[in-house]
Image (cartoon, rainbow, N blue to C red):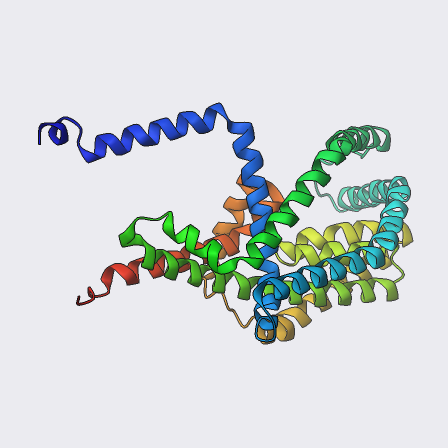
Amino acid sequence: MEERAAFPRWARSLALGAAAAALLWRFRREAALAARLLLGAATVAFLLDPIATRLEARMSRPRAAACAFLAGIGLMAGALLLLVPPVAAQFGELVSAMPETVAQLNALIGRLNAFLEAHGARRLSLSALDWPSLSAHLGGLWAGTARLFGSVAGAVTEGALSLALGYSLLADKPGALLRAEMLLPQRWRLPGARAAAAAVGELRGYIRGQALVALCVGALSALGLALARVPGFLALGLIVGICNCIPYFGPLIGGVPAVLCALPGGLWRAVLTAAVLAAVQQIDGMLLTPRITGGATGLSAPTVMLSVLLGGSAFGTAGMLLAVPAVCVLRSVGRALVGAREAPPRAD
């Protein structure tokens, strides 16, 4: 009794937490590497699990996981072989055309200021863009990117390890779930399992719907830009499709580069490009999103906008892309945990 009074439970928990935090800080690089590997492995297993689950009705779980793994790698390799060469070539064309785009934008600003002065309005306080300075900044960006990919061997090694761990998680799904459940205290195991199942279902439905909508929007945008004779239409369509996953702000973020790249063809081509992208957004808003996702998130507009703004402020474009699914997962976990606490205890 004296030992319990001297060391209460909260003090032991605090001491263990402090020791764990100090240990993580001491080995923070190793912990970050382990976290990256586990996150990559969990992503691989999460994406391929529906295929493996369907195949499991006809074969054992390890064989189903192997077939799903090979199918996923084959699809990814095929998509990369088909898309990477033309998209990379078009990005090169867009970079080569950048000086002319900057010149056209400067001319447009000059004509707009002349029009404002002629009508007695105040000039826009926009300084002329200088391509040499812009190219210097881009050169620094490219140098940083080259340094980032200079450690390609390490990145390939981490990717291979994540794939191997992902296959292990996929093949041994029941065992992995059981081991994860055993990490929780006894009273939290059932609520934790329910919360995880709810979060996985919410996240899988959101990703499936958003990926299909982004694919359709990107394909329609690329087709419209090709008909409008905009250079780099395939690369720009890819940008528009990815940015379309960002609620409210995505169409503007993805549309501005396309309009700017259309400026060398004249002002009317830029206007036509904006009209094409606006038409694609109308098709998305009236047909694609209602039929494919149907407002599956159930989040209010202010919640979505605030989540996107906070995610973008904290983590940039990646934060804007991941803000809404993160909020959906947290909501599902919260609902599952609250429901578990309010449920009546089971009779022994």
